Image (cartoon, rainbow, N blue to C red; front, top):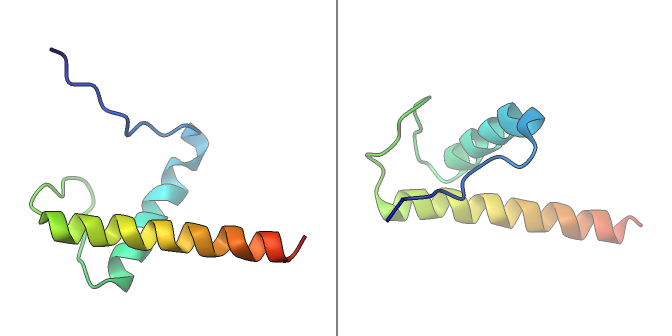
Length: 68
């Protein structure tokens, strides 16, 4: 069975901005990311980065809704 990944960037032009967003979110939760491979992160560390990213996206969406 082939291993397919859903981690594709939907808008390739946004790739650099998404990478910066991930680095900022990691910094905010106290996780050090390297450029490139980060397979040595624990599940907790990776989850905290993803959780922080989602939290920030929701906050931005709520602000955008409030400013309509």
